[in-house]
Structure formats: C-alpha cells, structure tokens
Length: 526
Image 1 (tube, helix red, strand yellow):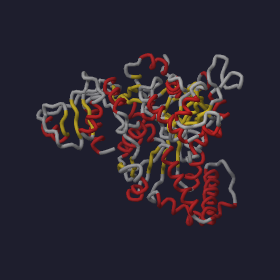
Image 2: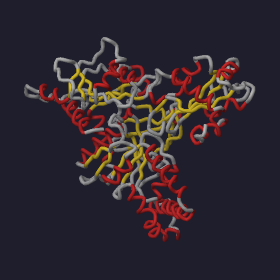
Image 3: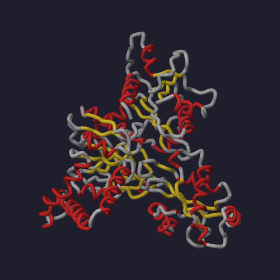
C-alpha cells in the first residue's frame, strides 16, 4: 500500500479508465492471466525485476503497451514500453488535460476473485457500486475527521479499498499505511489509530500472541486476565440488553486498571472501533477483544457486492451474526436457505463470463451468495453454511476445493482427496494413497510399507507436500496445500463416506477425521 496507489486509482477513475488491482505477492503466471483476460494496456509495478518475472510468462503478443516502474529510475527511454514513473510524469502531460464525463453506472474496476476452475473471475464494479456501499456503511458508524485509520490489508482487497480508503475519504478522516504485517504492533503504538478494519487472521494473531505471553507469565497473571475477559464479556452482554446485571461487574473498574487499560495501550491507546470482515470471526477471538472493552464488529460481504452487505452496529452488536443489511441493501432467504441480496453494490457482472453472471444474478436482480443463512426478527443475519463447497481461509480468500481435489487424484498416486481449511490460515488435505502404489512409494523413501507408523512419517508427509506443489502449479498461490494426513483406508459406500453416486460426504469425512484435521493445524511437530 502506498500513496502512489491512491493517486493513480483516483486519477484513473477520474479519467474514466478501468482499474484492475493486483496482489503484489501473486504468482507471475496468475498476474499474466489477469493482464490478458482484462486486456490491460497500462501496468504499474514497483520495479523492473517484478515486471521481468511477469513478462517471462506472458505470451509474445500481449495487451500491455506501457509499463510504469514506481521505484526504478534506471529506465529513461520514453519510446520503450517500460519507463520509470518520474520520467513518464515529466513527459506525458504536455497538452492540457480534459476530464471526461463519467456516468455513475460506468465500469470503474475489474476485481479478480477466486474462480471455480482454478482461474480467477473478474468482477465488474461501477463507480456507483463502490461509492454507494462506502456511503451505506458510513451510516452505521460515527466516523469523524480526526479519526485515524491504519491501513494494512492490500488495497487490491475490496474490503480495504472500500472500507479503508473510500469510506474514510468520505468522512474526511486520515489514513496511515502500515509498513508491514510483522511491524503492525509497532505501527499501532506509533500511529495510535482510532479505527481498524481487518480480516479475522489479524485478530487471531493478536489473540495467539497474548496467550503465548500469558503462558510465559505467572499463574496469578493468567487468572486475573481470564477474569477480566469474563467480567468484560458479562458487561458487554448487560450493555446490549441480553443479560441481567451481575455483582461481578463491581470488579470492572479494578480489572480495567490492572488488565484492560494495558491491553489498549499495546494497540496504541486510542483504538475505539474495529471491524472484522472477509471470513468468519472465531468466537474465542471475539470474546477476548470485546471482553477487553474493544468495540469489535463483524460484517459480511462479497467482492460481487462491492463488498459490504451487512455489519453489526455498536448499539446492536451480536458477534455470532454478521449484522444487519447496510443502507439500501435488501436481503432475503431463498431456495435451500440461500441468502440472496439486492442492492446498489451488486456487480455489473463477471468480465467475459456471461454464463457465470447469469448463474449468480437472477432475472429479478437478486444476487445469489451461495451462503446458507437465517435472518432474525431484528434483521441480524446468521451464516449457517454454504450451498456450494467453498472454503474461506481466515484471510478472506475463497477456495473451491473440488477443483483442487480433482487435480490431486488425477495423478494416480492418490485415490481420494479432501481439502480442508475453513477459517484456517492455510489449506491442508486428507489423502487416501493408492494401495498398489504404496509399497513402491514407501521403499523409495526408506519406509516399511507394512508398518502403520510409516503413514505418519515426517519424510512421507514432506514428500507429498512437495508433490502437491507440482500437481497444483496451475492454481493460484492461496491454493497451496501446506500439510497432509495420509491413509490407506478408502472412503466407501459401505463405511458411509460415499454417496450411492460415489460422491464424498464431505461433512462426514471431516467428522470422522476430526482429530487428524485438528492436528494439521495445532500439531507442528510433524
């Protein structure tokens, strides 16, 4: 994130150009695909090295006509397709600049999101889409000109772009860019932000760090901390009108002094509002932050809805829900309990993909989210499942596991595969090894194929993680499998893990292997 990103986004939108944001850490081949699919003409990158990596995987005939280098002064030839930003600015505007008229419904941005075939789909958003959602979200909170937003999610992430860029600009607030995620804690102490928008992964990192430090402290310190969170949660429930007053609340002033105030100082001392979106916020993380007197609000949305659909309000905050629909957005429950949305943020459609557009937005303008939900009498939305098997990592990335699983079993060494990772920081997989191939695999790695312990060998697991990296090379970076559990026991109709049509019963497999799946995320010894 940088001020230059903002400058060029605003300049391009003012000129009626279409902005295609890219993730700086995305694989070059995926970036090349997006450039070709969106027919990108002007590309902005940090350095010539970054461009070289992309250019190496682009076809010889590609759409990019000009490449601007943010931080590379070595290129000076204005006739070349590659030029440093400063040289381009010095020579590009010899004539008077005339701003064209841009209609609100004009295409403003194509944002690529997780697809169902291993390739991303381009979501087309208009000026009206993004600004109406930013304005609608603004009605839920009191955002003031002296508020400070700390921006650290990539601006290519639609949540950060709308909520952490357009929204504070509307309110006249300040935005400060964090140096990096590893330096986030130090940046928070220096910047002293009042508002933070993040994905659950950030809150979980803070949660883990707090508990790690508690584990290194005294028994008394841990006891007092847990008591502060417990009493703080009761206080929150009482303030929300869900619980009666409790005598334990009399301890709050003391606990605030001993624990809560010190916790807030570590977050800069002025943080008054935090919003979580992009994936489900774990209950344990919500209870910690809310129990320590931080207003933490969970929201919900999709790239296809620009992105915000709903968010909790400080005065009506139910952490188990994703809040109520923002201003101008209608929600309803359709067939199979699917949440359907109609509002000013609904996308124009998918770029170059009319079929996918028709499958997502019906003839009456309702966008089908693919999420199962129910809506309470108060209007709070509760997400209870998914129509399609889509995994949402704790950074908000949405991953269709079926395509990854199909690629894994296509090699012949694996008979069955199930990818897991809902709400987790990375993907893992349960793999059923082909029985005929197993003896040879084991012998190649110096393992005894007749010993059950061989399946849990670290050598074997690392071997398959390397193979998966090769097999899934064509998939985006977020589809990488980090850990595996290996078995020779097939999933069959007889053991209840396959349907009569030989489809894997995902929920039952996950239930059967619950212990093993938990170990893939909590046991780092293997």
